[in-house]
Image 1 (tube, rainbow, N blue to C red):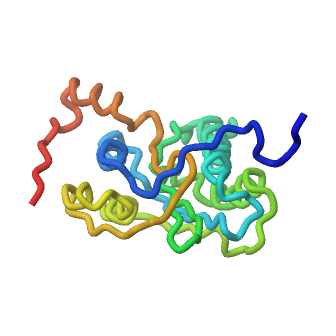
Image 2: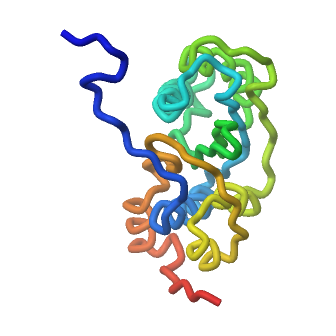
Image 3: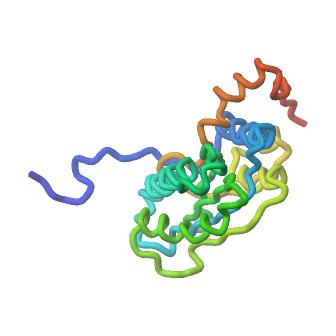
Length: 208
């Protein structure tokens, strides 16, 4: 059996731009989160370049971290059952100038935000392996998630960026999925809440 690294392992897809469909899903997801009372109130940046995680596995490591968060936010201790919440977030992975990083805009119940911040380093290290710097994670409170969408979508294809009125900045090559959202604010849920009259009807995007 050939044990040469990479032999027999399918090469994973990489991209250097965000497409229209995933960007629209994130755009609408942020709005739906607000409508559902699950405002995206925490903004976290992870620098994978300051960890032992191979660049081609960053998306997989980040998915592992989000899964850990999902279990935590759904299952608070018995004394905190009133603040259980569905995992609600949008995210993007970028690689400008070979500095691989991820941004995560997430809803965390107010009563659990200190606990969330304390758990983040543990989840991150479990996902990526060794972390070389205490600056590999940055967390900020958010009061206007809508205003952060342009930052998340700046890696859009230039023509799509114009469609959204966003200034494009090239964000490099990323292996695997480079942008996404939680299921509860994805396109299936957008359609459901639109049909119920809770979420505004679709608007046609017009380029300028």
